[in-house]
Amino acid sequence: MTGTTSPDRRRPRRRAARTAAAVALALAGTLSLAAAPASSAATRPAADPLARYHHQHLRWQSCLLGPGDATGKELDQAGAQCADVTVPLDYARPDGRTLTVAISRIRGTDTAHRAGALLLNSGGPGGQTLGDPPFVRRAMREVAARYDVVGVDPRFVGRSTPLDCHWPTGSMIRGAGTGRAGFDREVRFAADLARRCRAHAGDLLPHSGTRNTARDMDIVRAALGERRISYLGYSYGSYLGQVYATMFPGRVDRVVLDGVIDPARYSPRLLRGAEEANGHALRDWADWAAAHHAARGLGRTRDAVLATVETARSAAARTPLRVGGYRVDDHVLPVLVLNGLSQDNPTAYGDLADAVRDLRRAAEGRAVTPSPWLASALEFTLTGHESAYGSAQASILCGDVPAPRDPETYWRDLRRAGNGDRLFAPVTKNINPCAFWDPPRERPTTVRADLPALLVNATGDPRTVYPGARAVRRDWPSSRLVTLRDADQHAVYGVYGSPCADAAVNAYLATGRLPATDVSCPRPTR
Image (cartoon, rainbow, N blue to C red; front, side, top):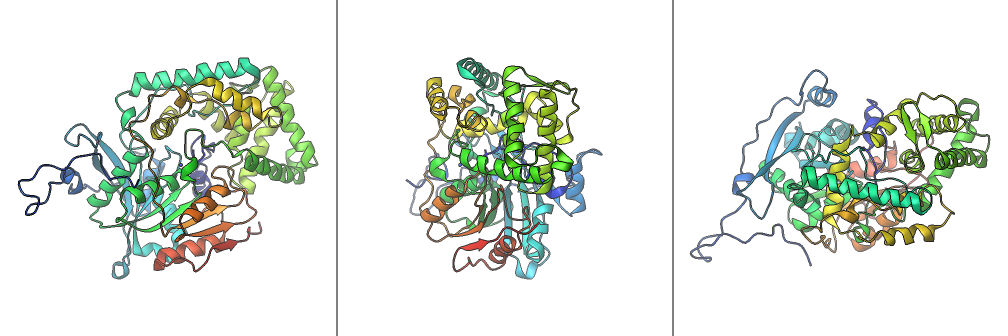
């Protein structure tokens, strides 16, 4: 979950195009396939069971799907082209059913100094990446001319072959509610989400998961004619990069992982352990809101602002709040607050402040028309408008690592959290549909022991928490870590506006040489 619970807010921020709710890890072989038999292993190599995929011809064309396609329009204006890559549904049966993986590409212009292809993943899991090359090229500055920048919508995501469980929500993440009765409602809700996936996408679920996404990436690499690829992965994309580098160790060049997941902690309960970071982010936001009391009206001090949040939460626990056409209860309100805390900038802070203002007004019994960000978050959380996003996210997380199946495991976690944290622990420790999922088809990847990658993380990241980046840095002694200090920020490179962090990444992409030591970057003055 990139720790994300809904479509990533980085893209609306960096493109200034639209508002979306935020939020949310033995060396394996590349394939669980036997080589084709050969009459003489000494004289004739084994046949490549994936040859028709590796050597396919890609048909490049306009990315624009129609007059309302903003992503396609932006890609076309940036000089991108799009293509569909054919991959097997089941890598154990490569001659069987196939899927398409949608990709976009902006070709590098400095062919004399070409560094190769840079593949992107923006996280989620379940996040669309096809539209990202224009943003990434802007972040890369002059280095971009040396790369073909390639956006990939992973299998079952975006323009790739879809997976949709027809959920009444866009997210598998909700709060546990109040008491045992509230938790029992969540158990039934999670079980129903899993049942819908079996009913509507049961033939696809066994073939979801990060290992198959990594296999698809290698098909993309081969179809592009590249011997090796460079990679930039945000959030969940950091875990995907770790898995790819493990499964295909000779096929990575320069690797940047931003918002780093500790693979030892990757599971369907990925947000567990993020309570402290989110509490810190909430207090920093409350300081900002108090400083802007004249405009936002939430309280003149941090404590007063936090009391306003608690007033709305406790009111929602008693009776669902009416916000426009939606009803917001204590299963939903904590998720809204969590979603508002992934970005550390005045625009995101203002969005959350407007949302809390609207929720407080609803708690007072007043008629409320939700602010644009809150309206988008409510539509995502309380309707099936983004069902495919939540479906794909669940299929990946549940298909990667088994979750505890006994609801009492989650209830004990919630009981241990007590009443000290009424906002975040009920979300991070709650049950989810993975508890009712079929067991994963493969064992989780044991990530390789070392990789000379560049890691990037903010100290206050409320999704992929900083200790995870430190753990990966420790386990990969050849890597280097770029730290953005004193920022409650999820995703740094090209997103936050840190000249120090951006320069470190671009220098590495330009030369292939990691910094001599780890890099510590100050929080920019805003």
